Image 1 (spheres, rainbow, N blue to C red):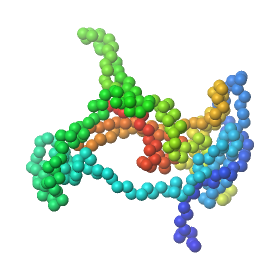
Image 2: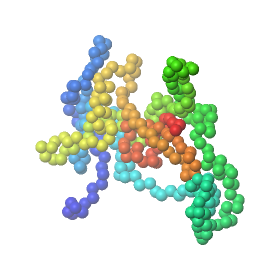
Image 3: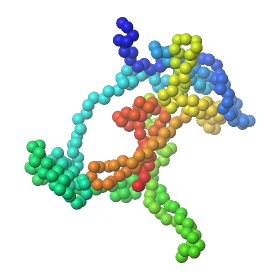
Image 4: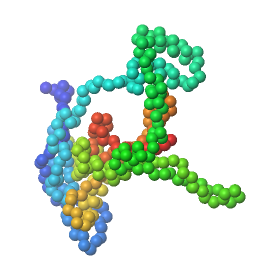
Amino acid sequence: MPARFRDDLPQPPPAGSFSSEGTPANQDIPQPQLADFSQQPLAISTSSKNSFGLYRRFITGISPPSEDPEENLDIRDLSDAAPPRSMQEPFFPYPNESSFRLGEWYWNNGHHKSLADFQALVTIIGDPTFKAADITKTRWSEINNILGTRVGDFDDAEWLDMDEGWRSTPIVIQVPFHNRTKAPGILSYRVGDLYHRSITAVIRERLTGSSQGLFVYYPYELLWEPGDAEHSGVRVYGELYTSPAFVESYEALLNSPPEPGCSAPQAIVGLMFWSDATHLTSFGQAQLWPAYMFFGNNSKYDRCSPTSNLANHIAYFQK
């Protein structure tokens, strides 16, 4: 079959077949000078190539790596197509579509209604799908209370009991005043509280939990062998754990002395932070500004999948 008619499916790098190449050539990383630390030579392990000419090169203190998280990958892991799910209570907190449309008209465009708003109301109640019987038993006060709930309406106890590691820290700013004012000097003002979680607790929870996804402890260089001597070993970039910064940091860790009395394998956890404002509802101005933390040891394809649940809430800012 001609190549233009073939569709090659994605493949993970081959697993379970490594060859040793000796010690790494990169000696630019500073080495610790400790009298009681005997540095062990590092080993380079190279995997075999897949059908696209891709292969991996590990720099580890053991040869080959003790585990390979990509060993059991198949096509379902590389192309996840989740089945459609039915949405429960799509108009929550409203019980039905008619109540939702009427509530949306009431809350949108401010309290002072115009002629255009009146015409919009006529359009709603004149629509054949609008059912007057559906709005007669709607509990409007309860719905409005739910819509008006904000993050600041919860007390500290509810936040601190929410999950392990959450805490509330007061935010205090210092404001200087001129010496000619009635109260010269620097005065402290409390402007609010920051609800945040211990980053160490999040790391411990993720590493000891079962929902890690594809978590790479041993970074590697992803290389491409096109088949000609002129372009041998072309570096391929795509994941944080295959980047030069991650690999060099891991090599520096292996060249550093271990923790006293600890014989566990050494690994690097890559932390990635992101934050953006979130409008909680379509009614009113209730907003939330969460801060998220991701692990660079997870594949970017897993991090971008909402069903993977790999985003960790670590703080909530008050706007």
